[in-house]
Length: 526
Image (cartoon, rainbow, N blue to C red):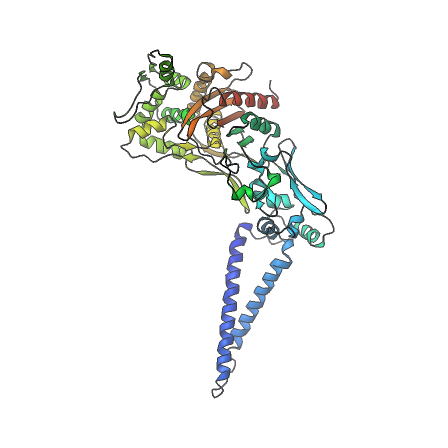
């Protein structure tokens, strides 16, 4: 049996056939007009077969292309490409492609996140949890098309796969004949519905994102973005009157934020990879590269100033102490010491300024951004100091910070994030050496036992992590926490961002603790 045409090549082939069709029409009309002109010149000898062969070829070509067009329209319901095209691009409600009862979308435990139901002769797509899962599931609606997994996995949900057309003939006959509603196949995600609801509830009325994943195989258990939209109530208002809270923005995979002190994990890994094993003097008065720029200071300096007292500074400290205390002075100096090229190399190694594909089909892809690392002038040392403390022009997504943290948890290897349970686990890249990851994990554990995140230390859950309070030019500081658990043989990695919520230790860290504890219990550990 001849294998079917690769669906990825079908749009190009169709475009070429359309161009061929119009060229044939053009030349056919041109020849007809020339024959008419010659027929009017009766005093000239009539052509003897001069145009018969070209006209025959053009006529056959024209007829063949007409047959192709007719087959695309009349027998298209036998093709997965045509049904997917009609569902995604033909918004008319009487379009028979919308009669399919698409397969359900399920969480990892089989809980229904999206399903189709026939109501008064029409098939409707329903979403039991409304906006909770829409950043991943998306919507499928005749008038407004489809987004998210509803669009990317449309062929599977319709009941077939591009590589196997055996079931599409029966599906097409059901659609055209209208004897029974054709049914698609279910799609199981890696998400955990209970944990996703918990994440959304903990963010509450604020804006933010949570990404929880298994660092060993890349399974995404939570991918929450708040606020979101209700896929059961899609209307033109959602697109014509933009909401300032940006419910259509997937903050987890596309929202760009300054990472603040959580980025010190990356700077520490970069320095350890380059052999750093020293101490740095961190005076109370702070650090700057030039008198033209304000000094970078530690948060203890400002806390003492508010109390009307004087802080003596950290003095000369090592990286473990600096990470636990989240010393801006230490990491600003360390960043300048390592230099511009070290940041560029490490950014490239950790896939900064990239789009990472989580799932892709010929009908779309689900991707996450990593971030934006500025290209600084070689003379800009202050910009380098700002970059080293996660500020300045540096921006990241919560999904990227979860991926970076998961790489530390999995001995330096970043697993490709997975949303579809049937996608095979795959290594994405090695972000750092095993030795660096092991040393960094011990330091991150100290952050929780002795440092800025000690408020979430739990004897039942050995968390390693890093808090972050990122300055926000548009308002109050963003609250961050990234971490993994347990420190030995981690099975969970998390990133929590709450916009404008202040200290990471006060807001983001407790959310992370509760989610890690609940997820660990579901894994069978107490």
